[in-house]
Length: 118
Length: 115
Picture 1: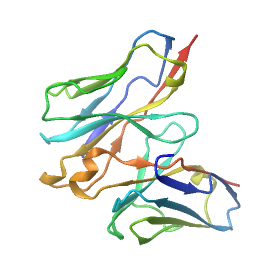
Picture 2 (picture 1 turned 180 degrees about the horizontal axis):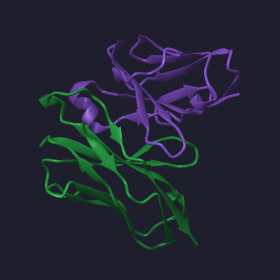
Picture 3 (picture 1 turned 135 degrees about the vertical axis):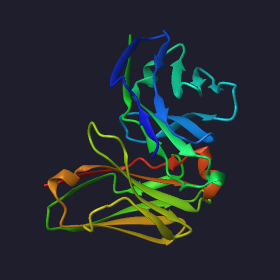
Picture 4 (picture 1 turned 45 degrees about the vertical axis):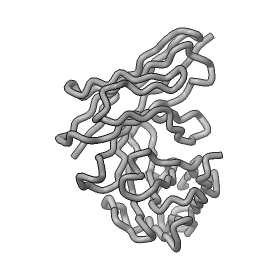
């Protein structure tokens, strides 16, 4: 079974600075997909960014980018020019490539609480 | 608003009560999910429904009873709950099979408190 590990329970960053959140995962599969979700205090999980494991190019979405290291099974999220609205819990998540089998189950890490400060 | 609506947003119930959580999506998705989120614990997948059929039950106690009457609606019926069942219950939907690899769309959750 795959596992997702986020070793940083809490982090803080000054507004306008850059912060990196870490995530590692474990799987025996070669094709899979990785995600970062953001959960603000309202509770809703919002998809931030998605990475396909068979693509070497790191995904980017505006101020959000990832550093995907497949051999190391590492998937970190970089937030540039941090804003107060980025304060939230961030979850790393994993799903198999369903063509190769396995159920459509999204597995989450324990989350990193990010606080952006003035 | 993401397209997945959960009601109620907050629920307080006694251990002998019976209540239901509702989830509705109009995204054309055909897979729906219930997750439980407790403080300081990973999100726990409870149930998976594909095309109205339950395809996953992660050893959830029988005091939680899901129902999926169609691909757009998902319910979680609750009865004789315990205080440790207090948590945020999140509903999500996705396309079935390979479409799920684009990620799930989540509702805002129901904050449940069992007293």
